[in-house]
Length: 311
Image 1 (cartoon, rainbow, N blue to C red):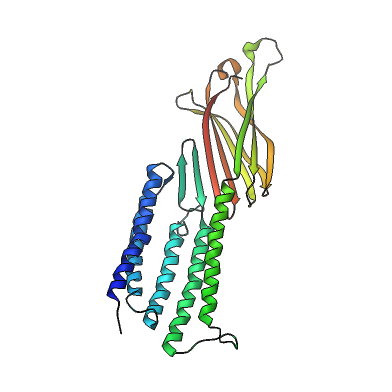
Image 2: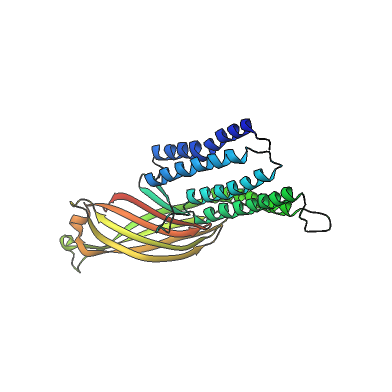
């Protein structure tokens, strides 16, 4: 059987770029600019997966594409590439419901659950692998497995389905980018609740709560489902910092596409109340924990910033 050493080497180089070089360079850039962090075990696993993928790709291109040997190896290579992408997008992260990826920016941390994307890639690879599986039998038996009187090959069915799925995934990614650029979360006012104790003397006034207002604007094409938010207030003037107030499990329901939910308010009780004369000169750190499901992606967003309570 004819072998293709030159083609095998060429595809080995291209596969090295796809499986190893490009992902590692991308990971390094994202970490350098403090956009995402990646665990060392994840990086090592990608390298190991990549080396195996390069070997399989080289074997696939060792034989001409019109031979059963090529189609059998293509079947295995396609399944393997699907598993590789499934792992890369967090599908194999044990015990972590939100997947692998964490985005770290100043004052913002985001956990992304990308299992839907992982399963889409795995399913697409499975369909394309079935194309090569059927083609291997067609070439081996010198017979076209047809599904209609017009001699439409069964392998062509899977090829068309695989192409449609690939286009659908590309469209999904494009819609994610568009929708993400059209989301907005605006914090409004922080209104302190002051108890005067029923006296005109301000020295006994206490800070009992802080009311936060905010707007959520969703002009994307996907709804924001099951929005839950926790609010925390810390006294960072104290050493160590002290949690002085929290409001947990605030449910804001669903914001549908091309809709806004303005003028939301949450009141965070200060426990125990603090003398206003002290509170008004205290530096406070405010933290929001925001979780939702957006376009099939689990999102856990944490925002933190400092402010002073002087009105």
